[in-house]
Image 1 (cartoon, rainbow, N blue to C red):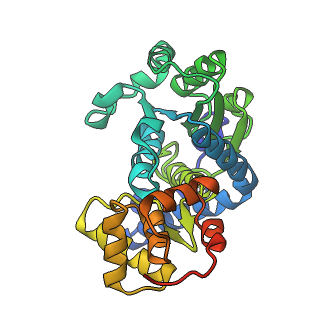
Image 2 (cartoon, helix red, strand yellow):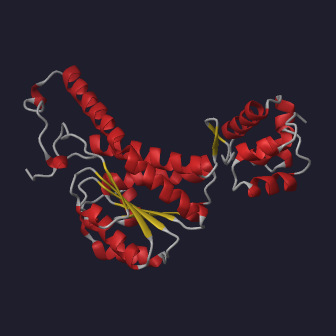
Image 3 (tube, rainbow, N blue to C red):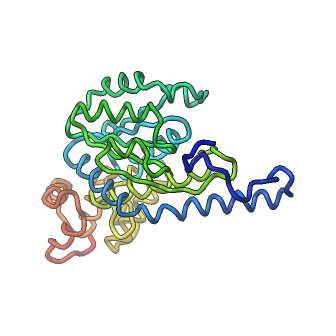
Length: 302
């Protein structure tokens, strides 16, 4: 096998196919846990990436995810949920997958080696210095995300690299390197397992911390949620009730006045006189709810 850690052989995998089902599943579960535990060591780098990502969004730039294969699916899962969960404008999120949209129904291996396709895809979105590419690759050497980063750098864009091997080529190219040193997979080289789990956790952490720094989280509530279904409308109402300390009737009234926007609805429920005043107050504090509430002379329901 290659000397990459992601291609190494698991010490307990010998005779795997002869084991009882329960023993195989227990070993697989332990592999996932071990992969998850490695993410903590990367927390400082993840925090650095979150600061860069928050700066990108704050300055009007875009987060451009670039990845292939299983890493692409992890990147896609993170990217697609940011608009709904944290109210990040959809045009601020771009996903470049090796093989394009076809990879979502037929994931072939060849496209991950196509650096030219990555450069073409990256150039098509015309990045500039405000943008940030988030490249994800288990090996750290996959041509598609590497070429996307190279093209982004040429355009002056920032970059974050996430990989599972120390010394990855990706880390020589990016502004922020996030190394997730996952142990060898139980199924050697099957990085959709442990490596993918660690990538998903790291991406969750990065984008969540980014959202917190942008002011989209208050006391653990997603106060910038886009409430576009019944479940989320109920969640929005509950958030207004909890943060403002009001009943459901007042929360509904405030949400109706704010057009469903949670942050201004909270301020309205606390006594701000109009949606325009609530928006002005939030703008004065860069969208952060806590200092906006603190500025109210006497927060009260109604």
